[in-house]
Image (cartoon, rainbow, N blue to C red; front, side, top):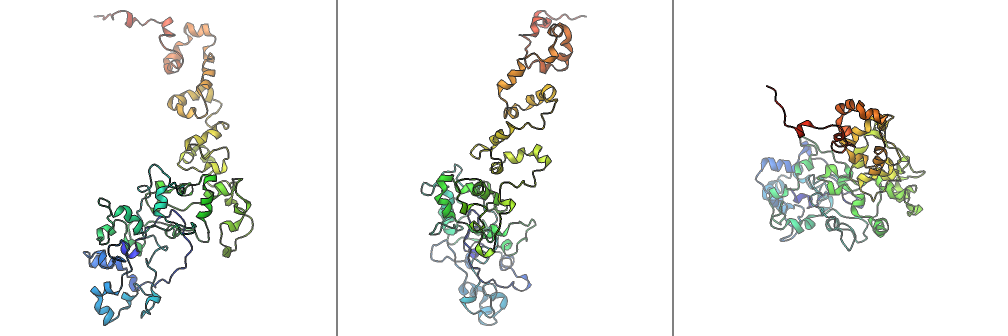
Length: 440
């Protein structure tokens, strides 16, 4: 049910400020889950009975109050006060008023209150930029920044209503939406009881809260340098355009920071990876030399012997980070072309002693585009314009020694020769010049 979560749509595009956590109510007795209970006992009950707009016609919903609860629970409020009912909103029993209310939305920043949001369906397919910010227009449209430009907020019903309040959009977002519309985005039973589904969704705490613990970050500082370093939202949040849900979406990783803060000479010393206070809160007490994983000199665990042969998938993947360590690879170049800088100076392991004379022809016939990564057509012509060693002495080869190789592998012959310009000098196809004679 959308309303109880205050219309906060969870995405993890940008980090959030560290906010003091409000008191959490102790788990109700017998693991009572209010939404699951109402859905099971009162299946026809609509969300808008409890979750009403903050004002007439608004799409933002307020915390359910006593007025909504009294429709069904008059006796529980006025005669026999029940702790199970009060515990849904209050920490203490008996309640002390508004001072002991749990935060609303109840699970905001502590649990994922939206599982199926697809950024891939919402981002601008043409990656157009907002001229005012220089960032993707859809990112800054949904994720509004605070006055200091330091943090971005998760979008609310107000941002979503810009599109989803229009006719034809599903789910439909209105002031009086029904349960079907609410469930277009939210699954409250799973939010209250994570893992209740057959396939539990493993989503990290930082995905729900929008930040890593004890890490500080300033978007405003990066805004100032966005032109100098070519920074956009998707420079760091590169998973967003392809993300179909929170299970495949995360915040930037340490390696993404290393890309600039350890390799670029333009970064001042105060903001390099060697300065712990650049990213870590002072209260964490972090000091000393930067760990090995904070630099580009630590060889990843997956770089084993087999990786050298089988790394093509990782290197060709979108947003491959090879250039963080391999300085001869240019991040501005198309991902697939990043291999060129290494493979032009490093011989592949397939190029053994037999490669040139016996093996490469078959591979070239199957996939010439791979050869073209390092070799140009002139490279092939340099060798193939020379007489192959099998053709020497040439008079003997022409006189008849060529017959057996041609019968075994005629395709090799046709690499350089055609029947018309070579074979026809000696061989005459009788079937082309004389009618066939059929013996009876």
